Image 1: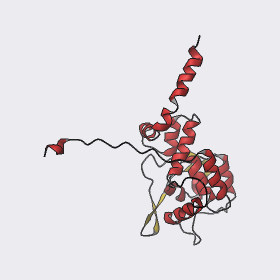
Image 2: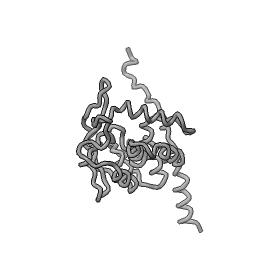
Image 3: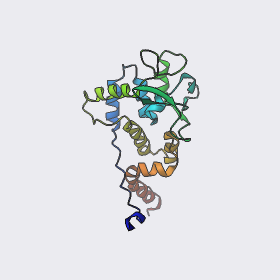
Image 4: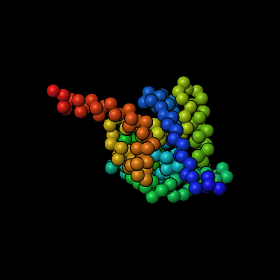
Length: 205
């Protein structure tokens, strides 16, 4: 069949759904008293994946250096939390933590093992986190996005605040900066006029 030798075109990537800063703050305010508040805060301020956050252990946190080491991830099989390796080699990384995250973690009860656990002191089943996430969203007047879109929200906020894409790539654990630029091309397009304006300010007579 001659069609077998034809490479089909790749569909355009869908533009990620994200929250504005105001919408993200509305959500954080709604969960500020919940024991999983720090999970959502880390997601929205670092872009870490859900499984990476649930896989954090106390020994992975450097409070003085304000960093977290991504070494494990939590996935779900048959309704059970499974401890595994990060998604890719690049995913095993050290990320900077904002002061607000450090402050939130310090308010929690220190211990050994996983930072975020169930009432039985076992790793959180991702499904249970999602159940709580969507139950909160259903009560708020903000878009009902996926948990993974918190990652996109964090990246978009950083890029629109002029953080270099290379820094965003390293924070997210993307395999290459090309992946970062492709994923957030819609954000970069919106910055083109800004670069032109800067050139105008430099070379205007």
